[in-house]
Image (cartoon, rainbow, N blue to C red; front, side, top):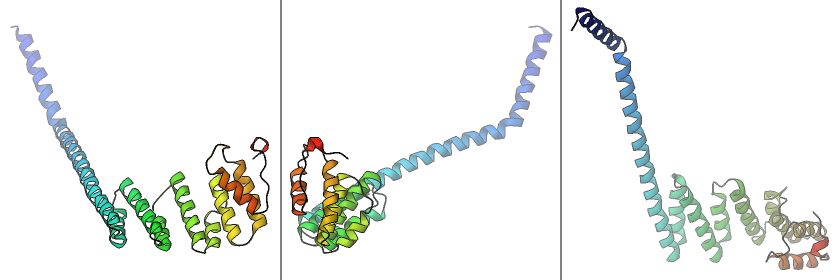
Length: 213
């Protein structure tokens, strides 16, 4: 091998060692950071799995309590679920508890359970409508009307009309029932009941083909 080649190799080796001395700390730091990120990700995954497992156990406990008609114990389990990060488990458990409370005639408890739901979007709308119906049944139509104030979908308009009927404001209720019918599909199963409500409020049922929004 030529002397020039040996010198080139030596020079290249020196350059590599110099580069490593200058950048070695950064390389080691990057490796340590990468390992930390991987470890953190695995920890987060395990933590999520543990939370879901715990939520599943508590959800089963709610179901068992409801089956045994122990609503107070079920309420405690639901509160524990809502206090954690159980996601859909907490929502389902609360809905099941509220249903059982209504069936047991404990409407006020059902209202409190539903109000405790951290619902958003369309789900929040459905929950509020259920709360409003229960408020009407418990003699609080003014609270129901306030809760759904401004609601313009068919179900919301119908419930607002129910609240007005409970307040003996049949003329206003008739207008809301008419609007609700106009927004309801002609094949909807609840249409007949809504038509009866409209007629009871002194209104007339128009031909669905002629109804306009």
